[in-house]
Image (cartoon, rainbow, N blue to C red):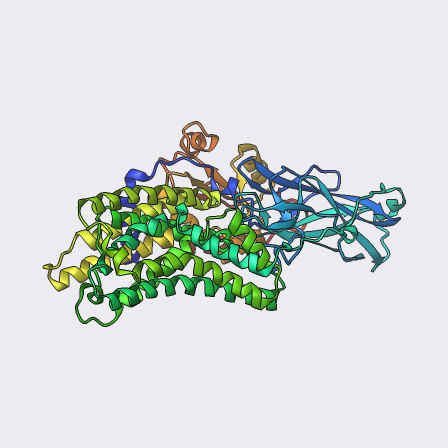
Length: 615
């Protein structure tokens, strides 16, 4: 444990100059991917389901009748760009379409009746069926399980799915809303009418042009990928590789070029394979750039671009394989060429334009064989220029000789890489951006250690120590900064002195976590303490009011209370107010998870008289 603590403290010291970033707290922004129950009454206002910057969607539940059948009207309201997916075939992932289920001990509910969808054109050019803005879903009551004599019957409504904007998709969410209805008044419930999805006759069809025309478009789309900004990051590496090839014999130069082309084709073969699996097992189709819906993939690509930028700046070097240098090598040069081609194809996937969208849309609507051929033809089109260039010695000889111009070209592209990396990070969910930025700084430092602290003449022991240290530091930083909030396990409330005082008067336990966005130790506390499921379960079981007190700014109420009420000099600090005790139990620092767990176990279970109900 001491070694782990030392490594973490080392990380904190390295990044101490970068710790005063300002952003919203995770408790305020992590409205998506939140699993939990929300207690609401039919007379209450709307409950917010998801939010991203200015885009949001909320829901409310009302008793209603449709076609003279009683049931629940689940009414969505939101902005025009945030949408839910209507069909599993075109949703981003299996089971991510909007789903609504209701259950009660007194009623048996039927299948939810959805309205007619709208057609939304994604940046890739694909058209999908979505629900957006204001719309209503009806959940009918099929029968009464138990005669309902009570005036109000409790009902749970579970809503799940994925919400997306035109730029990105938010993490999956699943929320359960609790409400009550008076079934004795069902005859007076208002009647609702809307066009149902069963009435929708608009079906997305593939383009009607011929196969030969579609395959020609696919080849042209592959050619154009070579000049798209997405491929710029590897252009210097490709140019250097081709220049080096020009020094080799015609046969070796040709084989190296074909190896590079093979890497491109392997990527498109992977896409074709993924499309086959999705079609056969999940009844959906692959969409161009689908992997960029995954925040983990986007973050990984952004970090890869940062590392490539450091290579362009000369922070570290990649030795030219012996097979390229003309020595009898082990063949690593060929595997390197394949890998470079694969990387070039991967980086091309964010690029979308009319011809590519048209070719891919045609492939989506075809049977497996022509769809696979069309996807592979895109790869052939992308690989063709390199195959031609490396197989014609006359063209290679006309390339300018390597020199100062190549070094300047590399460094200039390095800045382009950083711009593209920032754009990728900008597309991440807000709760992940800061962590990825912090890790990018630590990763850059580790790469500098790896390549700059040792040389060819460095003693082997020192070389191993430096590189092991850089790897451990990178892994530790990734453990701290990169994990995505898969959903808050604890239902944190904002700091409010009145709520705390009311809970204490009701003899309800109160847990306050004082934190700040610029506090790296606070982020570690959230990772190793409050992300533990056993602690979250105890907080739920004991009916503890959990308060996340944000002290990012000096004039925040929590900041003033930390200093003037609780006499604490700084964060992180957590306090547990136990009923009957005058002073709270306090934990400073980061290593107190077991002590908190022990204190929570000693609390009485949630009382059933209603005093400890959630706010």
